[in-house]
Amino acid sequence: MIIDWHILSDGNPAQYQEQARAFFGNVSGKYAGNPAMIYELCNEPNGSDVTWPVVKSYAESVIQEIRANDKNALILVGTPQWNQAETEAGKDLLKDAGNMMYTVHFYAATHKDQQRQDLSTAYDQKLPMFVSEFGITEASGNGALDEQSGQTWIDLLDQDKISRVAWATSDKDEASSIFRPGTNPDSPSLSDLTEWGQWLRKAYTGKDTSEEKDSQDTSGSSEKTAELKSGDNELEVSLRQSNTWNSDGMVFTQFDLTLTNHSDQPVTGWSEVLNFTKEVSIDQSWNGDISASGNTVTVKPGQYHATIQAGESVKDIGFIVKSDGMVEQK
Image 1 (cartoon, rainbow, N blue to C red):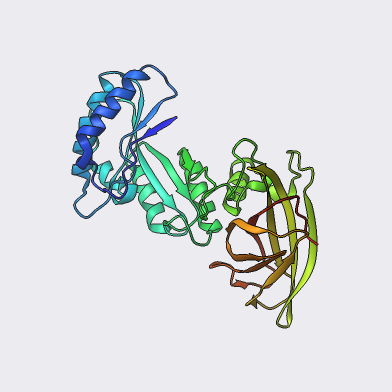
Image 2: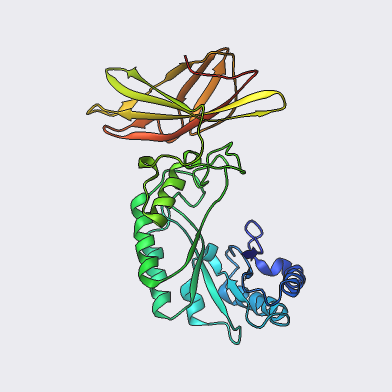
């Protein structure tokens, strides 16, 4: 378990140094001797005035509090520029800190060759590193996934035997969430994985989620396929009912939409109208412009799917409808 002092917008960890000392002194005393506990001193130091000497001074102060309680606990120390200045730390290491590592963060659609070269340089400096946050979206946590850059990162980390933790085990409506919005936290299934979640699972296990049958009971789930014409082109549209639950007297039903362009031309300006057996309202939706009126749901492109290239499939559009009874597509 990583206990993280999660600075971000405040930038300079020294701003709350005394509070951090008190916090880590308290938790390291409570969990002293527990090898499962890892202490991350500052999430992402950033700002023009936040240099490595500033972060180093902060870390030395906080480490004293932890070491007073636990001589062997693993401590993670961030570096400036949102944990991307590891080469600066490699030139001026912390002294007498004991069991510790320096953290690196990356988002593969933003951080590419230069950041990978920096990591390799720090590795050559024999800097002990731990990737405590990564994804294959843009650094904002949104945007298109860059699977190729992501795989290049994974290959490099495997080569140098650097451990990593992915962001984020969440169902927030953003591209870096592993689960789709509305996922039941008590019983998540393979069908709840976002495109990023599916990629990550395959990267870790070698298993392609799209080719596996979900082991969770999906009784009541259904799938229908239709042809959607957009201009002179055709999309194959597949709608899957992946989850249903009751809450406060209402029935909530999750649908996942897959669109496949079988033509040899890009498709733009597409729109799909779905008809249901009961009147519905949209509770949540993701990766599309989705609205409901009566028994009808209209799906239009989101920011990232306005154009579907020839041969491409879009699999991360979905929505949850709310109704006063069980809902099926007509």
